[in-house]
Image (cartoon, rainbow, N blue to C red):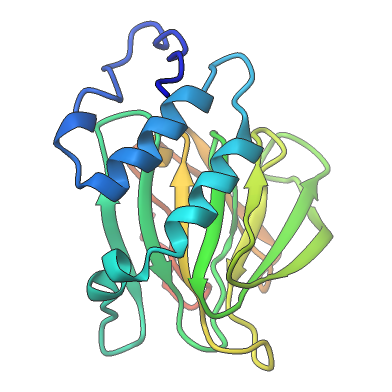
Length: 211
Ligand SMILES: [Fe+2]
């Protein structure tokens, strides 16, 4: 059955243009995303179900899961210029991302391992805003988690004592580096603006950029 596609977002390239050229498992996943990504009200639960189904296709995914010598992986499975994009990320044992937002919806699901995911609320819109943790999940296989901007402040990765680091499928509703976002450093108690083009730091241990 072919689902109706929602209207394109005005002024943006067609995010579905490359869909026919994708491998069959990716094509099936992105057909579901296209049907669910209504600009007015994306159906994130539906995208989560599709991502869980995709996460269980180990024949397709396992050969693609390659980490570097530090146990870090950022594997681009489908990254169009704009619109929903899919990658696999893996943070090393005991290492988390900085607290950040995305400026778009996010759906994530582990292929294997356990991803610690913490949600935060900020007490204001600027760089003097402080964040407080409001929810924590240990996300394992066969589960998905969704975030909707602007309530999308979070950090994630691996905490000691929580299984093995996850191979995490992440769909971002749009290119995070195309919008202005924020990134917090909990250890220093600081927040900085991520201008368009700044993808932010991957790990809390990554150095802050100059300037
Ligand atoms: Fe994130």
